[in-house]
Length: 94
Image (cartoon, rainbow, N blue to C red; front, side):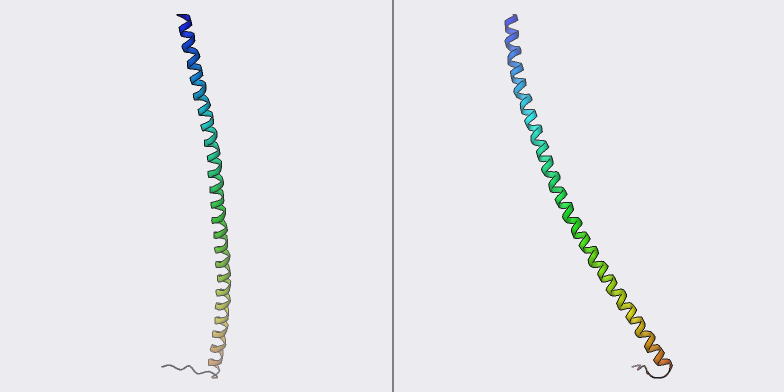
C-alpha cells in the first residue's frame, strides 16, 4: 500500500507543479497587462492635462484682451462725457 500512495503522491505533485507554473505565468501576464494599462492611462492623463493647460492659456489671453477692451471703452466714455460737459459733443436721441 505504501507504493500506491507514493505513486499517487508523485502524480499529484507533478500536477500541482504544472498548475503552479500556470499560476505564475498568469500572474506575470497580469502584471504586464497592468503595466501596459498604467502606461496608457498615464498617456491619456498627460494628453488631457496638456489640453486643459492650452485651454487655460487661451482663456487667460482672452481675459487680457477683454480687460484692454474694457479699459479702452472706459477712456472713450470719459472723453465723450468730458466733451459733452463742455458742449463740444451733442448726444442725438432718436
